[in-house]
Image 1 (cartoon, helix red, strand yellow):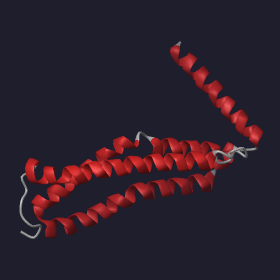
Image 2 (spheres, rainbow, N blue to C red; image 1 turned 120 degrees about the vertical axis):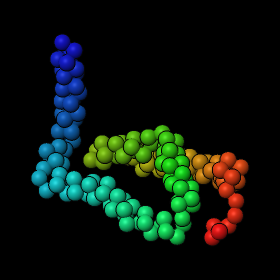
Image 3 (tube, one colour; image 1 turned 60 degrees about the vertical axis):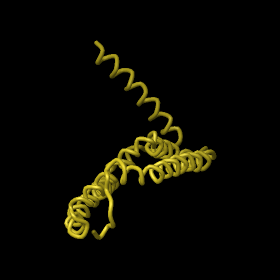
Image 4 (spheres, rainbow, N blue to C red; image 1 turned 180 degrees about the vertical axis):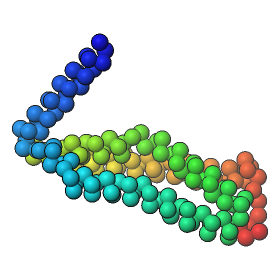
Length: 153
């Protein structure tokens, strides 16, 4: 019973979106047709796989000159940077979805304002996070991890 209700609700929402796009002259089938879909899939997989290939090549090149202790510290920094993506508050994904939904709409005069506002907010969060990390790094390295000495030692 619940599945039937959800299917009907989502089907109605989908039909409403498709009818709005049809009124605007947008053919959704063209966006997912053969070559265009294959090209999008290729670029998506390339964007996902390229960092993996670079990482596999770069790791041995980084471990040798840094040593295992300093490479471990670099790994902690990478983990911290990855976790700081939490403070993006999904603005990047939301902006991407908004632009994708409005890009073909001829009445999208407010789109540049939305884009620049969200980019400014994300840049502000980035600057604040960088300031916090810059302020806490000396304490973290010297007191929490008790690492002393020069990088070459």
